[in-house]
Image (tube, rainbow, N blue to C red; front, side, top):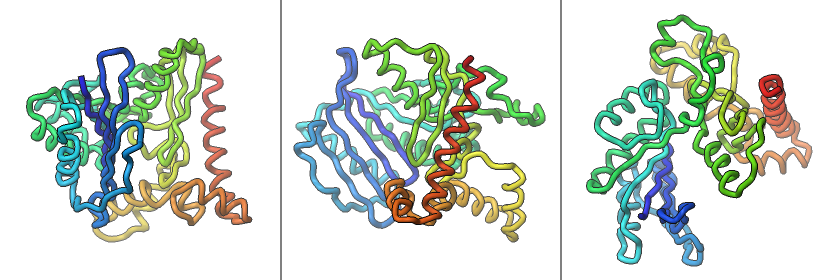
Length: 320
């Protein structure tokens, strides 16, 4: 069976084709549409070997629907194996879905409800799912969630100290990057590497989180209700005093909805390491600047490292 896997963001779609049925899935092709909606979108697609890799091609992709059109056109070439199933990475399943699932209209309705928890991530994923299902109506489609791996966390690790009415609405610590952590554990098992009784895994990138595991199962993680919290990240601040968010809302005087949108944008795209350094969101650039004596860049690195050390240290008592 050939499986198309789609990992979407608000302005990009990465995709791969895997051959399954003989143990570990075999990676055959990959590609990406980048810069969706920017007026400078690009497309690339090549085989696993990379021998046919070409420079990214400039394309028109003003939204996810146009982007999916380019992907479908590329993977429908005669020499490409026919797609027999499609899987999607989805950030947040909301309060009703607790496992990776085959997508139905009921599941899509549940995802629509979950948008309130991930307004920056889920809407584009849902649009991509609906469009791809139209393009491949006769094959099964599956949603895999970043939160599922953390379903093993105990309630004491997921409960927020807020009134019950909000907890009953699904407000709790979900955790994210679960597909990454799940993959790490599964790859260790596939390599016959004994899973340590106590282990910490760090997912490090522009978005980062750190998870504590007992016998390969998540018992705590740094992210909470959304992917904004936890350790300091590329453009996200990580954990904050809730009063700071209230302060920002008070400072941005004017229309309520506009203020909420401005704070949401600030916390997701204008904070973190990039805000501390004053440089582009690229750790390589930040490290180069620090090496040349840039104090802001050095502070950003020090805050980045400290937040991770603090998280690791905070797990030590859990894993005794």
